[in-house]
Structures are given as structure tokens and as C-alpha cells.
Length: 336
Image 1: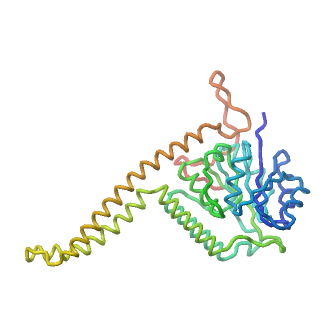
Image 2: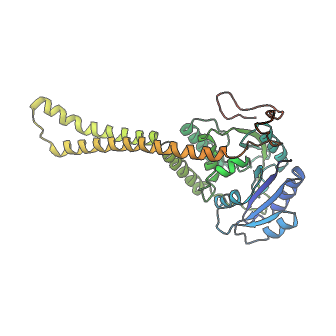
Image 3: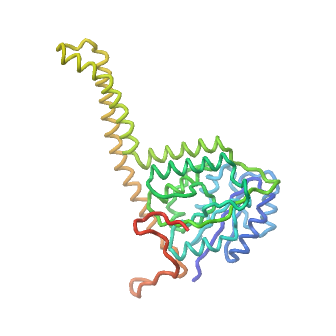
């Protein structure tokens, strides 16, 4: 039985580019179902995509995250490819990405962007991507080279275990952190990246969306690394209490009296708050571990991606598909 492949193309006013994206995907993956999710477009995006042979779905709530949430819930496939409808990614690499997913097997293959046309990256976007990727790398301890790439292939078990809580462009950050924190096998492959067609307008706003993504990273750190965040906050509070309380202690040692009662009370209160914050962090860490275990069990409920179904226990174990294994022994994310 051949594995099923689906392509999801989120679109908002992509009349100028979506037709070419659909045709390129059809040429690269003729067996795939291609879904164009129209996200409240006001131009001819739907007509152009339908004429190119795509299956049209609609998500009226604006935002790429809303589209991903809807598509991941609706589309059933062994491999799900996600690509933007603006024709900036090299859709001809879709076959290579899907093959790599099955040959791994991996739960995610990320198309790491490489400029094929000078100026495809706006300077603000390039700097923002570097800074935000570095933040995720520091917080979650894994190698990531292009955290914000919108060109990815997922296994069924990734899709069905991914909560998809984001509403806008920060959804790629959520995907990356989901894979890193559950230690899902991931690979990267270099793909061409070029500018939009002249008549196509970017919906990404450098500062607004960059701040939104940074806010998502901080929220994810608070949720996924609560002991770290609470330890830092508790440490700052404890340092403040020590700075305030040290003169009071020195006065007590010298004179045997406490002349500054308000300062002493304030320092003691801040130190008590620091202890409570630290304790809450450890409690939340336990809750996070339970939530991680639940996500992992959902992930394991689905078979690993492969080109043929696995044999049952009564038969011989199926051999791994041919191909180079890119995952390192220490579980770090591989890069092609």
C-alpha cells in the first residue's frame, strides 16, 4: 500500500502566485492531494487555484496559525507538506523532502532557506530570523538553522500530536519548539528561496510579527521550561532582598538593634516571595512533564512514516528504508 501525501498551501490574496505553486507541486508530487486553504482572500485566489487543479478549503479567521490548525485537523495523510502560496520557495524540492521523511524515517523535514535571488530576504527579516532562532537555540538547547521556514513536511504522528495554538505567523515557532521539546527526529534540507512576484504583496510585518514571535518564544519558555524561568525570577527577587537586607543585618550586628523596620520587613517579604516563586516553578515543572508524557503517548499512537506498512509481531520485523540516516547519535537535529 502506497503512503498518502497531501500538500497544504495557506493563501491570503495570492492570485499572482498560487497557480504556479500548485502546478509546481503537481509536477513534483503527481500522486499528492493539493489543498489550497483560502484565508479570507478578496482577490481571485480561489479561482486561480481551482483552475490549477487544487482542492479548495476555506478558513475565514485570518491568520496562518488558524489555517494550520484547521488543516491539521481536517487533512489525513502519511506525509503532509506545508508550503506558502507566494511562490518564494522552490516547490520542485518537494519530492526530495518527502523522500527524506520516509527514508529517515523523520517526523519533520524543514526546508532551510537559501537565497537564490539577491535581496529575497529583507534585511529586517534576516536579522530577526537570526535573533529569534538564537533565542530558541539558547532556551531549548538544540541546533536550529531556520526556525521560521514555512516549507516543511510532517509525519502523520507529528500532525496529530501538535496542538496548533498560534493564530498568526508565530505558528512556525510553535512547530519548532514542539519538535525540539518532544525530541522528535527532524532533518533539514537546503531549498531555494526567492522574492515574491512583482504583483504579490507580503503580509509579514517585520516589527509587529517579530515582536509577536518573540512573545510566543517567551510564553513557550514559561510553559515548557518553568523551572528555568521561575529560578531566574526567584534569583532576581532574592538578590533584591539581599541588597535591601544587608545594611539592616550589619546594623543589627553592630548595635544589636534594628532601626529600619520597614526595610527589614520589605526584605523579608521579598525573600518569602522568591521562595514561593521557586516552589511554584518546580510544581509547574511536574505538570509540564505530565503534559509532555500525554503528547508523547498521542505521538506514539500512530505508526512511524514509511513507504510500506510495518509487519505485525507475528512476522519478521520490517527493514528500515534505504537511505542515509541523518539523525546524530545524541539526538541533535541533522542538517543537510
